[in-house]
Amino acid sequence: MRPLVLGGSGFLGGHVLAECAARGHQARALARSSTAGRAVEARGARPLGGDLDRPAELGELFRRTGCDSLLCLVSLGFGHAPAIVTAAERAGIERAVFVSTTAVTTTLDPHSKRIRLVAEDYVRAAALDWTIVRPTMIYGAPGDRNMSRLLGLLTRAPVMPVPGARRLHQPVHVADLAQAVLAAVECQAAVSRRYDVAGPEPLTFAELLRICAAAVGSHTRFVPVPLAPLVAAARAYECVSRSPRLRAERILRLGEDKVFPIDDAARDFGYAPRAFADGIQAQARALGLAA
Image (tube, rainbow, N blue to C red; front, side, top):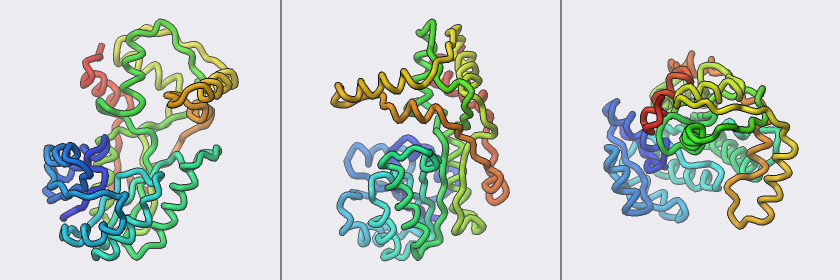
């Protein structure tokens, strides 16, 4: 297989390119800069200079690659889906996997949710043999957006407030997600299907924190707190900060259960994710924080 990978220089992209190499696939990866080009080349793929913000060029660019499949790992929340789908159709690429997110199931109404759902609808209407993969929160290696920061904090914080302690979470290890993406693109049964890709079982937020603390030998004391005052404080912070690092929406999301069945993925392409305790211990070791 000769996959064209979009987002190959990103966090998930590195693991997908490694999985491509392990399976003997000759991957090409779009790179908008020389830095991105060097990153994907180091990961075993041939870089392809191009930019999703120049959609008029994508069709010919995709066609010249000679690729027979598309792995779209870039966020669908930036509005690029129509250009990507059109370019793939014009290039004669028939098989495609698009990575979305389970965050589109939130009861909240962030702007990105609407964009992603429209993008998914566009993919489903395309003249492609498509598959949509929706991962939960991704963790498992240095550079992730959540657990690396949390593990570091747990080595320093004597006390930590815990909003939504009883709410359920089901994080997915980045290597398991990468394997799912490649397994899906190779699986005929996955054509025209959408899959939730999560960890093997849901954990309460309190359980998740205890497992993380054990991985780094932390004795942090966890104190359950209500959501409302934290949300109010985050909204005030957003009002005074030009680039807030914490938004009220993220805190509100802690008040929702994030539980997703993985039976369809297990049945169709053998998805079998690792336990969270195993994955987070390996991540702690990779960060040099293991107990």
